[in-house]
Amino acid sequence: MMINLKKNRVFILDIFKTVLIPVLSGICFIIWLFFLFQYPILVFPSIFIVFTVMYIFSGNVFGGVLIAFAVSAGVFTIATTGTINKILLIIEILWIIFAFLEIEKYRQLWISEKIKLKVEHEVLDRDLTLIQSSITNNENKINAINQRMQIFQSFEQMINSIENTMNEKDLIKLLEALTKKFISKGKWNIKRHSSKDIFVNYSKFNKVPLLITNTEEDRRFTETDYKNISSLIVVPIEIENNYWGAIKGYCTDKKEFFDDYDLRLLSILASLIGLILNNAIMFKKVEALAITDGLTGLYTRSYFIERLQEEIERAKTNSIPITVAMIDIDYFKKVNDTYGHLAGDTFLKQLSNILRRRFRAVDVLSRYGGEEFAVLMYHTTINESYKILEEVRKMVEEEKFFMPIESYHPIQIKKTISIGIAELKDETNPDEIIKKADDALYTAKKQGRNQTCIYKEEQKQ
Image (cartoon, rainbow, N blue to C red; front, side, top):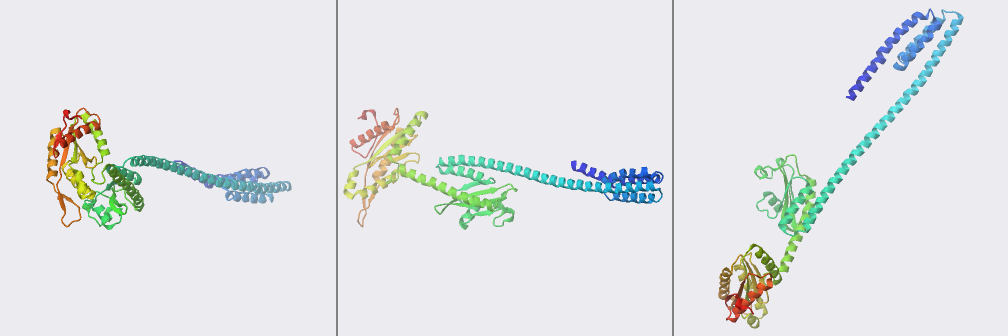
């Protein structure tokens, strides 16, 4: 709107300068000529005012021409007047010429100052534009910094969550969310197994990342494989130089595309994910070593007691029946004395495998002592436990154990076990119920071994 008004104003001013002023000046000049010859001394200077206005507004083109005509008219008038009038006219002509030169001088000075002011104004406009641009850039930088700070804060929260999480499944969920924040577009999955994913398999077997910026331009896969995917990226995850899985991202919005920059970022992130997952795997291995017996692979005594304490509290709250059984190998010392400690260790491994196969995954089976085992059975009454343990006892009784001795004919031996069972009632700590199961085990041995006994109150020592 302002630009249009400015253009209209300039247009009107140009018409005024080039048309109206020359026409009015011409009319005035004709009138002036009419009276010039009658009253030359008085009329002649009056035209100077008109010429000056004309000169200022229209420039030296029209003003200069009119002044030249005026001077010519003055010279012509000199020839037709008396001596005194001639002198006065000459003085007036000289005065007009002098005045014209002075006006021109100041006019040029005014033009020079106007140009200078215009240049300064343009410089100021340019500086103002630069300052505004700088302010805008700074605001954009501030907004970008604030966004990065928010992202870093969310990263920090995620990293803290990752540091406090060593479960592989939970870690994968957190790492998928971290990837989404890191790349800021697409949907993400971390694939542990690749057998059903054609894109992950392609990356795995070709041992290279897969980047498809635009699926419509890629011919390596069919439209059925792509479905609604517009862009796709897959980067393998390695742990100790071995393929573990892959991180896969895909866009369904046709306005979003992955590029080489995203691939570089994801490759860096995949390395970090590999380290994080490796730490989780190592932690799991260390944890397993801490809670499992090195010889038999069963849980340790300390872990058994810890779990038993937890289950006692849970059983009291939810009224869940649980039983504890103590298992001891009959005359195990004879095995060590007859065949050596290596044979004794082999026997313990074979017996542990039998026990592991018979009990459920939810049951807690542990090596409680040298040749003594303990088992915690969930949701199981004392009678149900008795039936299961009797089956275990008979299975061991019928089993043939091979002893690793230096002979072409391996030695087979038979052994039996004794078992004591106790059911959780009013006990509040592991020692109490373990003591009852141990008393029942003592009764089984006292009665001749190779049998299963249930704890009874009269068995208190």
